[in-house]
Image (cartoon, rainbow over all chains, first blue to last red; front, side, top):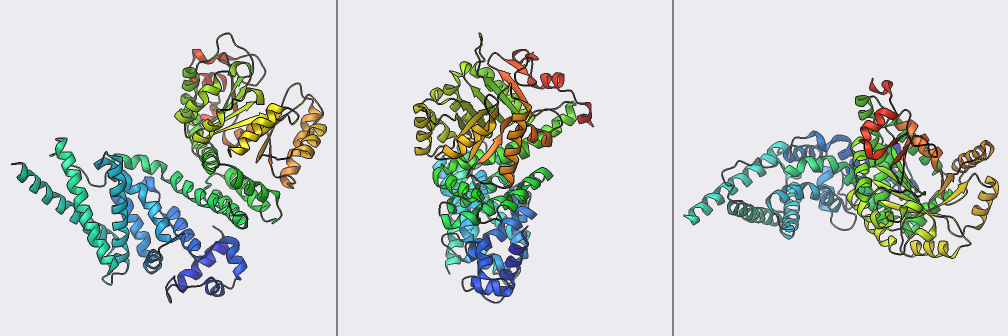
Length: 181
Length: 392
């Protein structure tokens, strides 16, 4: 990809090791890689645009959706991506609002989640409702995981979620069967 | 704390969703069947379409930003870079690299073209048509065509032209046209052109159905203004994967009315000029001097008999104006460019022509080589375009 964009991306990632994204300025990013602000705005609208570009390139370069057997393996690959740059992505996900990475990632995750939800719910309003809550919940849990001092691996993080869901579902199923008796 | 509250809500609603989910399963009496959480039926579908989905999203964002003139140049460069990033074939990379090079000129008329398109054309149409031809036809379709050629030992065109400009005693029905398109798609053909005229009375009634049924294809209809009905705008706007191309006739009321309507409704449209019957220079001078508004693309259709000198003059003009753009429109010398794309994707064939009566033509304007009603498309191609080399 574009050499200038790569340089700006590296500069931003280095800068975020010292300060949060909210405080980083375009000037500081440019200074770090020896460019002027005009060069930055030639390529990007603002720093959040740069963050979204970093994710897009990382995601498309490293993840071939069709090569995974199921959605869980795809989620593991996605979490691996975040785990490699956990400080960067944690910082990026903390920002909300227009053009934020959180919104951008939400839009990426939503079609994946909605396909799982469609298998369970046939009413389209229920699908939409639960898609939103599952995506929002996953995002919140992911932010927590990325800031976790215990350094839980991506596979372990996701298997914890999966184990909780399976255990709760099994318990609910038992309760329902008892009610019917 | 907000994160903890969100986690609690997540678990709470996960429980609710699982309860609701299992209740509905229980009600359908399929409890007892094992379900592999995460192995969704839909996963195969989404994995096939996910790349297109994220490209669509990126294009959506860029088109939204391009509505502000100050962002047009950057966003256009980013869209082109996106195309380059996703290009796997060398011809794709060459094309996008060339466009990138052209856009290094800050005064390039292509920036005006892009801003005009973003401002005046429905974004859904721009995106759908663009992604369908750039990704479906020239990437996915091209791959499938090559795979099929290796398997079948024949050449496959990348586009089919339905020449409905004549009159047939027994014109093709919607069902027959739909069947041909479906067979074409199976082989990797995603692009369908219609020359409208005598046999095309019903096409305007069908085209919405075809565009909807084959939403991942592109449909381009060449027609005179008087043949285009007022309702057709909404049909094209809704589908997004079709483009009407109107014969250039600035002095005619019908033409002004049709083009005015398309612009008012922000419908993606184009215009075409026919060359071969009168001087090329005169034709081009008239268009470039008099056209008040140029659409993003201007088609040049060669009409035989066309002298070699005229053909060469047109070729020189198109090549010159692409290298050094002067007008806010992209000129397409239709048959020459279709052949060029074809030669990159495949070996021999680039365009298959089918007339209103089902006659199949290897080259436009000759005698029919076969009747499409009598054969499957794949069998016809093996017979008409055998290519043992493709089989290696």
